[in-house]
Image 1 (cartoon, rainbow, N blue to C red):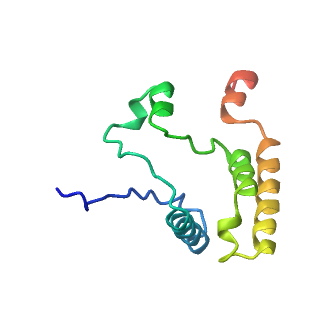
Image 2: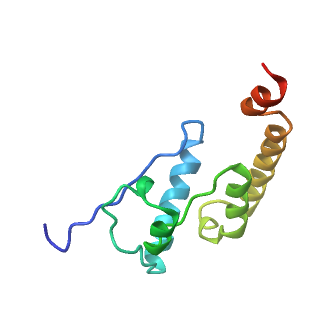
Length: 120
């Protein structure tokens, strides 16, 4: 192994995602990181799922959004890197579409709520 060998892990998004939008956004984020010379940090050769929250923080590993609402908020707060590829109108429309989707999902009880409260 030489100093020039590097590896990047790519985990494709959910299959329900639009592949054109998802792949374009992924490539745009990578190019943005290269242009801004963002330090990706040291390689982590451990199973991050087995690390404690404290160990992950020490290694500089941030968690991804846990739900659709958090993902929408992240997109709204950081989307300049997408603008060479997607119009502001597309981004705004996508955010509104996903906000509506999140509202609809939150209006129904979850399977756990059914089991806990409806005794089904």
